[in-house]
Length: 160
Image 1 (tube, one colour):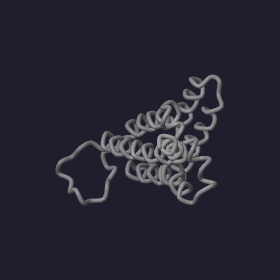
Image 2 (tube, helix red, strand yellow):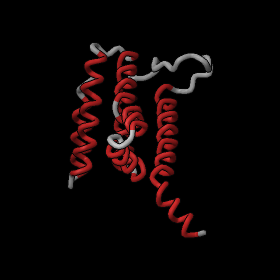
Image 3 (tube, rainbow, N blue to C red):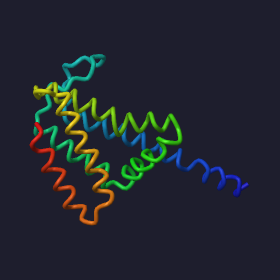
């Protein structure tokens, strides 16, 4: 019976880890957006989420922390790398990859840029997230990860 459990666990471990990673990402995004926008009690609970209270500085700090999370946190980094590979094997994984690493964050950046009055928000959001996504790959293969992180921070600082 123990052998059957071990076999089941080895067959399903990546899906268990994926589920835990999705939960961790959702919690991080929820609390990150709450930290950026503040917790205003006079907002209606059923209103669509607004980014009115975000400053450019808050957004930059949040972006730096997200970059650190997706590259330095072992669990998040492994999740990101696994989704990158699994997107080609399974449509569900491709949808998750798009939601967490491509179209989802790019749309969020665009919405935030629009809310803080960035001119050409769509274009600049695409540029911004392209840089972030590019630096994920650079970071993964770099020997001097600190230098890559510093380059990333310099690259995004002039976009807003």
